[in-house]
Length: 61
Image 1 (spheres, rainbow, N blue to C red):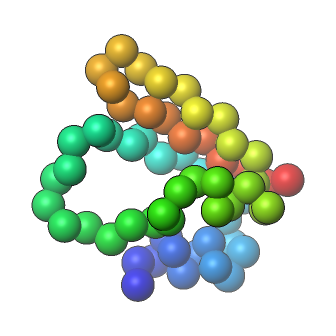
Image 2: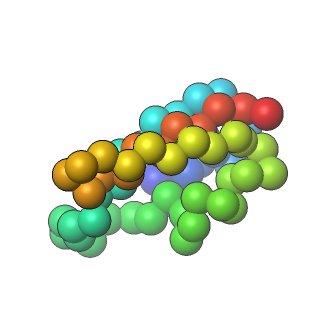
Image 3: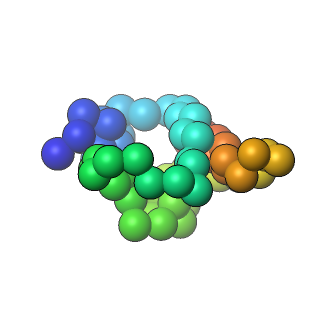
């Protein structure tokens, strides 16, 4: 399990910024199936960029 996921599960994260690329690099671990999984604890703003990368900004409710 990734350290980030452990911190999320332990409620130790107040804010988080994740850049999501439409290109798959290697075989890493998923932080979630869908970012909506975290909406019970976090607000979410998704900011698309012209390059195709989506910037996800989470902050505690």
